[in-house]
Image (cartoon, rainbow, N blue to C red; front, side, top):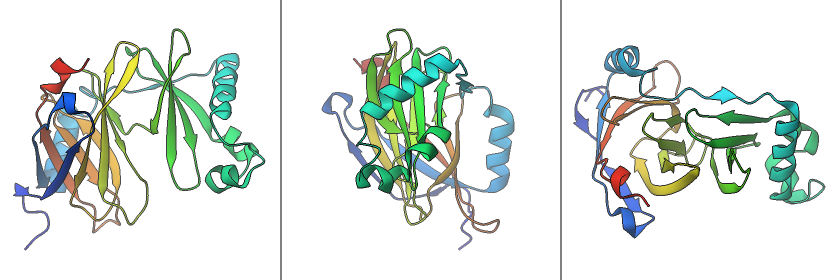
Length: 218
C-alpha cells in the first residue's frame, strides 16, 4: 500500500501527565506532500508564532549564567557528554522570545539533543526545562520533539503558555520511525508535521486533538 495514502489513520500512543487535563482525544492522519504544502501555504505563517531572537548582550549573558548554574560543572565529564565543552556551549547558546508571550526560551544545542530553559521575561524567574520548541500556536500551545535521534519516532510533548508560565500538558507519540523535522499549526489548532528522511522517505501527518484543555488549564 502506498505510504502516502491520504486519510490513513495511524495507530498512536497517548498518555496524560497531569490528571487535571484528562485524556485529550487525538486523531493522526497521514497526508501526502502536496496536501502538506497546501496547508503550509494557507496556514504556515498565520497560526504559528515566529520567534524573535534576543540580541541584547547583557541580557543574554545574564541568562546564560543562570542556565549554567542549573547544569553540571563545565569541567565535569557529565557536562562534556552533553555539550562537549564550555566554549561550544557558549557558541551554541541563544535566546528566543515568542511574542506576545512573556517567556524567554534559552536554547542550548547539545551533542545529541536541543534543550530550552524557560524564564519569565519580566522577572527572569525560572519556569521549567524542556526541549527546544518546534512550534508555538497563536493561542499558546507549544510542541517539542521529546528526544532527537534518528531511531526515535515523532515523540512529542505539548505545553500550554498561560501568562508568564509554561505548563506541561501531555505527551503523545505518532507511529512513525523518524523524528519530527518541521511543524506548524492550522486554524483549529490542528498540528501539521513532517518527519526527517531523505527526499524519498519524508512522511507527513495532520494531528487533530481536543482543545478543551485550553479552557481547563490552571
